[in-house]
Structures are given as structure tokens and as C-alpha cells.
Length: 128
Picture 1 (cartoon, rainbow, N blue to C red):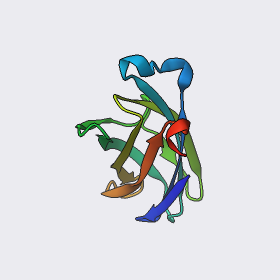
Picture 2 (cartoon, helix red, strand yellow; picture 1 turned 60 degrees about the horizontal axis):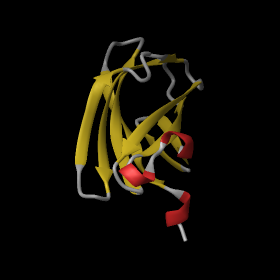
Picture 3 (cartoon, rainbow, N blue to C red; picture 1 turned 180 degrees about the vertical axis):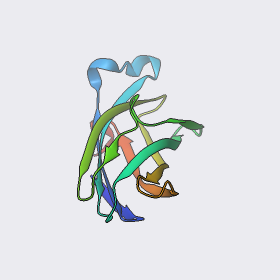
Picture 4 (cartoon, rainbow, N blue to C red; picture 1 turned 30 degrees about the horizontal axis):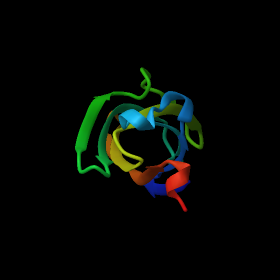
């Protein structure tokens, strides 16, 4: 599990290997990640969009951008929290993701960027 605070927002990420959705013989490895967003600002915020860089240990890099997360653009009250679970597929047993969220101060409409800390995805048998 990794955490980071930027722009008054704490992001915590926990990853899980999904063996039931993976097929190692075909170089298909599925991971789930749970992200907790905690708003420590004195104003409510809205998550507008996300931008990810996904690094696979086979050397490939993908970028993913889009509105919100898991089909939502959640509003998070002062001292509030929002959690979601999503997934990522890799072509090797090891990779990492990092990225940013574009947030909006609900009171002023001003946007700002929150950093999502780099998190690793690794199949359990590679951790030895």
C-alpha cells in the first residue's frame, strides 16, 4: 500500500493480483487496485478526470486519459472520502502505474492537479 498527499488530497492505493482473470501461459496478468481519496481541504472537491501512465516490465508504456473514475465524477466533501476499485492488465508479471487527477474546487470552480503515487503490480510468485 502506498499513500501520498498533494494539494490537500491524500491518495492511498492498494493492489491485488487477480489469478482467476489471468492466463500466465498467454502472458495475460490482471490486477485490481483500490484507491482511497481523502479531501483534507477546507472546500469540497470534484474529480473531473484522470491521466495514467502504465509501465509493463516487458518495456511497454501506455497512457490512459478520461473523465472521472469508473464512470463517476465524484464530489468529495471537506474531510470526506471516496473509494473505488478498478483494474489493469499487463503482459508480464510486474509493472507499475502512476498518474494524476484533475480536481475542481466546487466553491470557486478553480481546477488543480493531484498526484497519484506510483504503485507496483506484481504477481505473488515474483516477490520471492
